[in-house]
Image 1: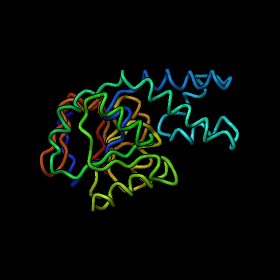
Image 2: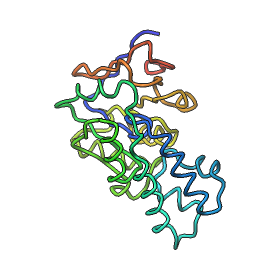
Image 3: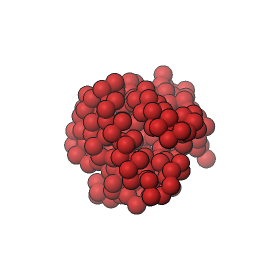
Length: 222
């Protein structure tokens, strides 16, 4: 495969798994939460990716317990934020985006998303769309539509970078081209899939993804 150029006027990043690697913290915190509720940690973890915490919690506890139980898992994750690291390539790419319309669109709450970005040393975006900002979480496209609108662009002008199936579906339903990040994205309909963001660079008119990072490219198919 050759390097891929994806034209875009702006970028919309998911946070966990795309900008920051918080997997160890997520597994630790949600496993702790599952044990608290006499649940199978593996079953709970299978429901976590791409969902807002409140939406995951609602799958396992009575509706009346959702607010308090969501507060508990958020507290656990905040307590365990120190081990968060940047996804390879991110600390080289983000500084290239000065003056470029970009935002983070995450299923996490604002406090947690900000804490993880800071822990990983990733510069904070001017625009952050979080769980508190939408009425429906991914795979609903609301977050990505809102992100594009707040940046003053159409979804078709945006490139979404996502790792979860629900997030990739949300980006595509919003009308954006989507880059899947990490091998698990090969099981989705992402237009392009990369191992990570190593070597990714902004040209002024779009994003270049190096051949060495590419796992799949169907961006020019059809």
